[in-house]
Image 1 (spheres, rainbow, N blue to C red):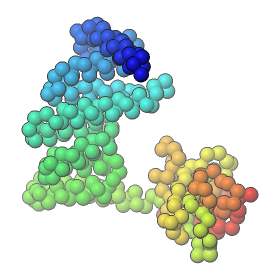
Image 2 (image 1 turned 90 degrees about the vertical axis):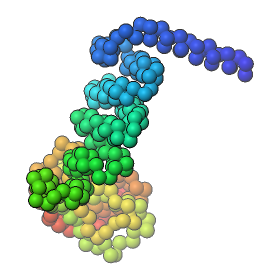
Image 3 (image 1 turned 45 degrees about the vertical axis):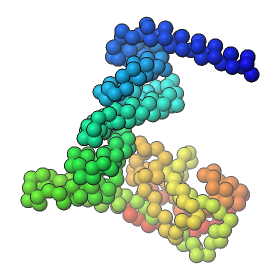
Length: 316
């Protein structure tokens, strides 16, 4: 045990010495210069992170420096699109950015903390990280649920996430706090009207598949149902919707949200077949004993149209 402890102590000391030597070499460099060194592959991302941590922990109450660190990490994560960049490293940078932003948001009085979180949300919006922006705005509203700037940004962010009803509700609450005949109230009402139109359009973008013999099916041995739209010629499905048997209904809605690839066009694809399969194991791949039904080939899907099929075949 003593030898084991000495081994780890020596290893730790070696790592500390390496970090100290690296810090002596890099301490005079600006953050922008360090970022360029990463781009030029003169130092690694991990070396950059170690250096920035060493600098920032020496002055933990500097909110601006934490913000700058968070922005740099967010920028680095947004630029990590190369296949050579491990996803784990990108996720790590995003997590470190979140930690840096949280440290920045804990400095100062409540008003300062709120203002910092608003700035964090703006940074996330710049890099199209809408879920993270929404999280920051929700934290602001926990402390001040009538913060008008946060409410406006929250509605815009929910709209970008296509959470249309949530955006409408947020803006209605904001509008209720304005003079109804004011210019700002009219602006918010215009946003609400536009969002209602988007919501109505989104709600019309679906097809329905009705199972004709639903009442006669024995579902006890199945765990999931899959509604699948695929090309007649074969290949990967265009859209797949998975439904737990306990939540299955006679009619299933399939929408563009169920597309396998976001770049595909749900309504332009032609020569398709639509099927519903009941799975015993819950796996997407057909297995012996699964039951299914499918439509005759169709030329294309039509929004709001109902297609009917019968579950009458067994996977052998």
